[in-house]
Length: 215
Length: 215
DNA sequence: TATGTATACATTGTATACAATAAAAGGCGG
DNA sequence: CCGCCTTTTATTGTATACAATGTATACATA
Image (cartoon, rainbow over all chains, first blue to last red; front, side, top):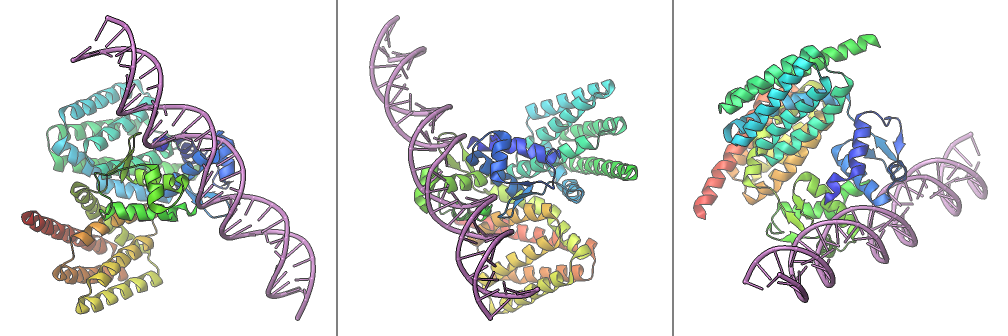
């Protein structure tokens, strides 16, 4: 089923997560058809997947956009703090040489772009780093769970901008995690990843507060 | 979209998880149509959801049944050990009086059926107990994640039978968790839930070993 | 005015026809 | 006999017609 690569699904999801479609709006299958120029079947399938993901809610009379709230972000981070390290641990225990090489290259690139202060590239590489760890964990369950979360917070992060200060620290943390993984120290890799996610979350909280003061 | 209540989806999922459909079998949309007496549209939607869940894999030439492996069970328990307690913690912090009442009734019933040695009812009530905690956690993200896991291990548990010994202990653990929750002690509720999941997992490992010796 | 009921309408659910695709089979020249 | 190209065939992807559903509205009646 290529439908998981369903273009409508991906576009609509991105549009919801990025706020391009306002949450006050009420969708319908037909509206989705018109918006993306397809017939009802692919539109329906996109909506079905989004509903399973909890991003929309079908009420029988139109489709409500639910999206991801600040509370959801809090919850996702609470969960990630507890399980993201599991992926690092698994990778440390069973990761292949090529996996570790790929991760080490990602970190090297990150260090380069930190020096260049290229926020865009750094965001991309952050995704790359975590995605490599997920895949290399060898756990279908973790990959599914963490990838979904990552997708959902990714767009949020773009909105909350990324400070140069946090970027630098984040990369330094990645480097530590990489070292723990490549030396096969699963215990340490898990602990360091917990710290990493926690720091990222605390940074988000700080930014949120700053934003609140603005408004 | 009532399609999340899609009968084909639920039946096919149950048939895959219970092993009623063998993993060696290769499905196709048409086969699903014939099996459940529906047209391609609902069959497709069922397969789509199952693929997102990772239970089947579309190869372009037929649909492979992936199901849940022992390794997946291991991973799910590793994750549950780390986050199931989060739901208990949230419920302890924010659960309504009626939630706590419902949970306390579930535990009372469990104690009754332990004395009656009714394994069937005990399995049902175990599901009830955990589902109440999930909902009362007030976290859409946790509900989605944990419910999916619970569904996936539920059928597995049925196959591995439930020993009377473990049932009794499990209910005792539930009672402790309930007490922590109703006294608002989130910290303790999380810790006790960790222990509970860990004990359940260790029991599964023991049963698995016993099974292996048989074969 | 309040309430019950019929009806119209918007929306979703299902079936099916047709198009696109990609793997397997078969044939042809080397 | 082997490799390449064509043809076939199984399967999925998309569009659309029609059925079912449920909600709002208007109207009749108490």
